[in-house]
Every structure is written in C-alpha cells, then in structure tokens.
Image (cartoon, rainbow, N blue to C red; front, top):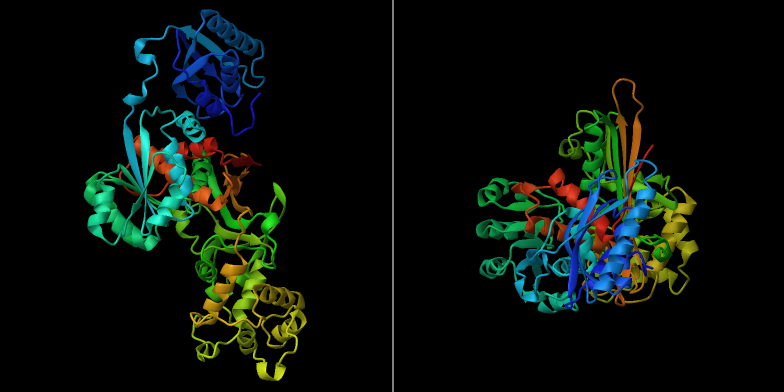
Length: 609
C-alpha cells in the first residue's frame, strides 16, 4: 500500500532504481494511468516482487478523455522474478479489460512487452549534463523555488510529477545559485538543498551582476519590483531569460522590443497574485470562448490569511510581509465595473468599502472583500473588455477586518506625518502617544485605567465610528497591540504610522508553528448563443502552510515560489517559445504551468453550475 498521497509514483521511482539488472524487458503502459492511479499499482507490483525499473518515457493526457502513456525498463536479477512481474502486470491489464470505464467505455490500461534496446538502458551518472538557474533575492519565497529546481534533475517527488504532467524528458541536473546582498541569508536558504550554491551579490554593481548571470541559463528575480529593470537589462545584454513574480510596470513593458531583439523571454507576474490568478482566469475564459460563449461577469478574489487556528487576534490577520506595505496597499484607490457601471473608491474609503463575502463550497469561512486597485485593465489583458458588464478583483480578509482598520485610520494611526509627542526627545511611552492621538490629557489621567471601556467611549465621542460594536473591536485591537502600555517608544518612530507598523510587526507575526493560508477564487458567468443555458463557472485554490523538516513553509511562499520555479523549468526545456515581455496569459505558458502546479500538489478545484 502507498504510505500517503505525497509518497506516490515518484517515491516508488526513487526506490526502484538498481544497478544489478541481468534480465530486463521494455514495458509500455497506456490508458488512464494517473487519474485512476493505475501507474501506482504497476510500480507497486514491480517493487513488491523485488524488481527494478527505469522510466524511459512518460506522456500524460491533457484532459480527462485523453490517454496517458508510460514506457518502463523493468529488470530483475532472476528471470523467474521477471516472469512473475510480467504475469502480474498482465493480470492488471486483463482486469482493466473486464472493467471498462463506465462513462467512456475505454479500457483503463493496456500493456505491451518488448525487448530493451541498448539505447534505452539507464544512463550512468557521468552522462548527465548540468543546467544552471540564478535566483536573486533570498527572502521567504526563495526556498520553495530553489528546492523545486534543484530536485528537477533527480528522481524526487516534485521532479517526477512535473515531468509526468508536461510531457518532456529532462536529462540534466539543475544547479541553483541563490544570490543575496548578505551571503548569510543565501546560505540559510540553501541549507540542505543539493546542487545549490550561495552567492553574495549587490545588483547595483553591474559588473558583479553580469558575472553571476553569465554563469546560468535562466534568472529568477525575487527582488522588489523597483530592482527588476536593472536585472532585466543585464539579462538582455547577456541574452538570458528572466522570470519575476511582480506586476509588469511601464518600465518593464518598455523592454519588450529589446528582449525580442535579444531573443529572450521576460516572463513577469508569475507568482500567486499576480500569476496563478491570471492562469486560472485565462483557462476559464478561453474554455468559454472556444465554445462560442461570451463572458458576462468576471470576478476574482484572493487573500493571504492566517489559517483559522492562527487567526487568534482581534483583526484575525497576521503579516507574512511588511506591515507598512500591507497598510499602504489597503489605502490605494480602486476602480471596477459592476453591472455596466464604473465604480470608484477613494483610498481613504477603501477599508470602509469592505463587503461580506461567502464561497458556497467553503461555507465555514466568514470573509469580506475589498476592491483591489484597477480592475478595468483586466478587460483588455483578458480580452473581455467588450463583452463583460462586471469586472472585479478583490482582496479577501476575515469579516470585520475592514471596519477595524478603517476606524484605526480615522483615529490617525496610519498618518505618516511626524507627530509632536514623538519628537520631544524625552522618551514618550505608548500610553502617552495613545492619549495624544485620542485627545486625552495624560497628565490628568495619571495612573487611571486606560482599558477597553475607556478607549471605546473615547472613539465614539470623537466620532471615529457610529457603532459601539465597531468601536469596541477597535479598542480591543489597540489594547492587543500594546498601545496602552507604559513602555517607551523607540526613538526611530517619528510618526503614528511607524509606531503602528512597529507594534503590528511584533504582535501580529506568525509563530514558528502557525500556518498561514492562501485562498484564490474566480467566478465567471458565461452566456451562450441560440438559447443555450448560461454557466456560472468557479475555480478555487486553497493552500495552507506546511511543516517540513521542522520548519514551517508558508502557503504564500509556496504559491509564489513554485510558479516562478515552474516558469524557469518551462524556459529551460523551451516550452515557452514567445520572446519579449510576457504575462502568463497564453496557453503555451498556463496550460503546462497549471498542470505542473497540480502535479506538485497545489490543487485547483473547478466547478460549473
């Protein structure tokens, strides 16, 4: 029996290799090998009998109707053992013949036995080549990408599954270089990863940057978006492909012709959001268009959240990235299309625009969504601008987040202007600062209690919110952050915004064992001609952080890092042939990439109603 879902075909492949093959045959299997788990049964038969095997070819059908094909070199030290294996595989195929798929009537598996040609034997370790990928930036997202790439040239879980899902053979090991301004950060990222090397690199040093890039075939930049242009220019100069997980801004778009001239691909927006969201969207939209459907409504929702067990504070939120960046993102203006009308939301009103949101297939999640910047541009990007009456992209949070953050904003906690009490130089405490911002006389108050009740009443009296329940939630958050405490504020904090970010980074951080969660959900309403019924198609990704070797790998790191790594793989094997600056919205990118994500274990659930 299989030990778990994560130790399936690839685990058996890793165990099945042997250097002692006196008798061997070439076994060809075709049918519904993977969706019916029959390949697992076949490999179990070989292993249980004491045989060995080598995967020679593998092609996975790209739809539920299509058949898959695998060619295995099966060997055993004893001819009787080999005969037993072949008899058992034949019985498996005969059982399949008698148990045709009830829907399609197709045999689930068929078997062919042939002789092993000399060219089909397993290559020795010295025959492999090496390809190289440079990952610049050693943050949280880096390790999943580095692990995936380093495992691609060996019979490991991730490599074997991605190989099966994308119909290509890979004969090289991949050497992964992880570069960071601080060598120690890169060394920590690659700890325990074979074929990985840490490099110190200052990307502003063009000569050093070019030296690193010249050693590799593909570059992945996980730096802040503002740094991508200098990396991209070096890649163009050296004719090396580039992958990023950031939005493609104007400065990157302008490099399109230069990239084409250099014969390279710059694939941006290859993370979660943006990234997987684009690929899911285009798969759904194109599936409708090929059936002559028109998109009536496209809505997309995405959020990085604590798992329910980790949502243990008044905001039900924790930061896996900079609180400063998250707060600023929550105060950006937004614009979207709803039932043919353009809706605009000011940045100062964004938190207050949060609306209750539920996903039918996940009824336990009490969520809300906030509009996410400019949704209108996706009408052009996705090719639905002339047909859709609703185009909306939203950010997901647990219900109640928006009203608390909106209240904190009105109180003044997000102001970036220098505050007088923070410039006194006499070491103000958080309590003194809170009294100032709530317009309370801290000297008159003395040591009087400053608890939830007092703060709630003050918020209401100042008119920062109308509902007592909302004021109470804001007061609970203020106390949870420690803004009422008699602790001295660090001198580096000069504004309410910096004070708030300091406390949020400390109090709203994940512990070493807490899971985060990523939730991405698309809904696409499709209308068809000639009176055909309309469709409401849905696709959902729900991923949780995972404990691995005693360390928590966040869902956010996985869903950003793995797509970037997959993009590098696709470029290495020349699956992506278009040159220039691209998003993952073309079939040559999103079809194999989504298959590889599924093979890795990041599940995308699609439903139609």
